[in-house]
Image (cartoon, rainbow over all chains, first blue to last red; front, side, top):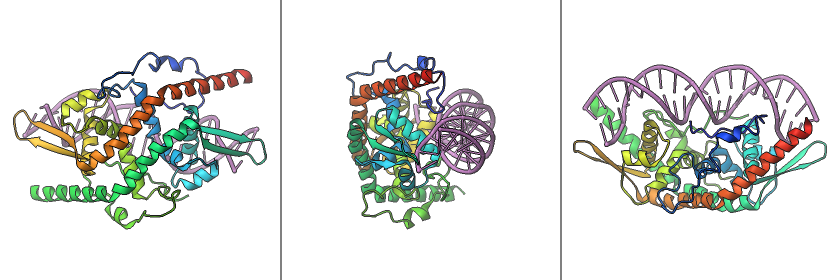
Length: 158
Length: 158
DNA sequence: CTGGATCCGACATGATACTG
DNA sequence: CAGTATCATGTCGGATCCAG
């Protein structure tokens, strides 16, 4: 119901699909700091989902004021499929975070870079990555402790 | 290609089969700033996925040094199902980001709050949310422009 | 080289019913 | 109230083929 439908597939229902979105109609500018993103139809929730996406995160982090070609990105991001890279880049381009430049040469050369808007996001994303790097050991320890507790509990039940 | 499997971070099973061995064995501490998270077996990637998760994001943002009960969280986060709230809270608890307190009363009263570790994450998450709030209009504009371009292109083809 | 399109399986997620 | 268990399904995402 609240699924943020992808825009992949280049649907020809360009005008009709936007009708079900409550983007423009809903005003999310509320003063309550604890109410800001609680409504699923709020645009902030949608953008947050896009921006915090698994692959989007990596692409943005990788495009640190650098131009990267499609294949370069694909090579750098271990595990991403061609399809997901394409889809992710399209979404980011649509959101104005990534600029796509096609060089009319043969073989085709397409380069991706962050837009100014994307550049501002980069810092935030980077902060998230930094936090993860700095605290991964603590998280791992917490996981082990939790798993140990669960295991102990289960053996106690048996 | 390489290992086609996903980042196996999101498991809602017992946790006994969690990938402990790979977590500890793989060392992600590399100096290259552009290599840090490119490998899918890197623990940073897994944690990033968890932390940047749609619901996790909201829960952490909501638990800003407050104790919230299960139902309160559920009510605040519009659109979340009971199941996903439970799963999300479990994951966060396992990762040591959220503390779960059960009050042995009737009716049961369970409260959730951020751990100190979760508190440090909170700032970063908050920054992400703030960015989204501040730039949602630009993103929306970019989307409209993109959609318009696509529409124009399609009508030109026809 | 850079994708677009399609097929299809797997898994995450939602809905529902049940429990303590 | 706070879950757990089960089932249904939609979406994501990978593999493959094809095109410019």
